[in-house]
Length: 372
Image (cartoon, rainbow, N blue to C red):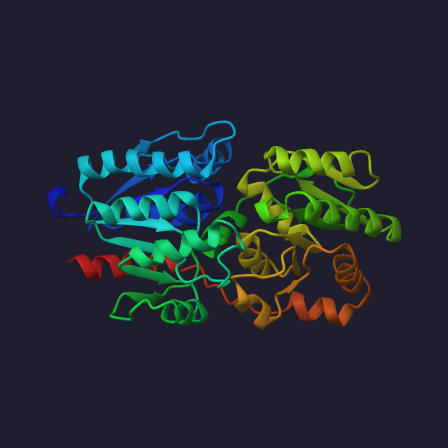
């Protein structure tokens, strides 16, 4: 097919979670003869983004390299608008794809809307219906949905959220599953050695991740205090925490957990070793949206360190439980998983509602059908 006859699809992302979820879609688009993909990264997260690009062997066509020390939402949003405008004016894509709830997703979607270019929102329809929680992600995804023309919703619940939000179902809403499962299944097939982490093979591993803004300060201190109590009460467990690079996370975690027996504070992991660490974990404690979606495919119970989640399907299916950020509740739920085999098995064996690993194929098919 002549290049000028191909559908030009601009794929924009900037953070590690976005890269993980968009990488399998980029690879799928590259395999379609009808499509000319153009990959644009804002590098909202520089180092962690590059790890994922290398894993999936993706070289961006445009790298805005916008990450700056102590950047704020005002400057980042304005730079995304201005810099993506330059690229959109130059390449004039047929559609711009954004992902999820980041500042990159919102900024690029708004930029495309201003340029009168159709927008496709991957992972559309997630909601807590609380504009302040999570902040600023809830408003980012609501606004991205508002300017999008194609909504690639991971679940039926997400579709209902779109309809509740006033998005018209005029043929632009599709249930596709979540591309994160595509990425996970692609990655766990690889032979990855994580012995360098130094985990004790005879201990049950609890994997902890926490990095969201709303958990900065007292909530994260509570989480750390819960870890200390669990370690003191259970001699057969170890906790491993890849500590996010944000100083608000680093300072709290190291002040609380440095030197605590059987707690390993490690650098953030590349995606491939992280998936293998998830696979070998006994329990996962997290405030990450992606981990909530991925872990059920690996049969690992997840306790969510938040009071609300925009991923209620996992709650309904029994894959995850809300633990919040109060020490007493976190300790209670973890202890129940450690002591009650029936409770543990009910979570371990629950079906993952987020997809079958074919979401990227479905999205590519829809784009071809729409634009051809």
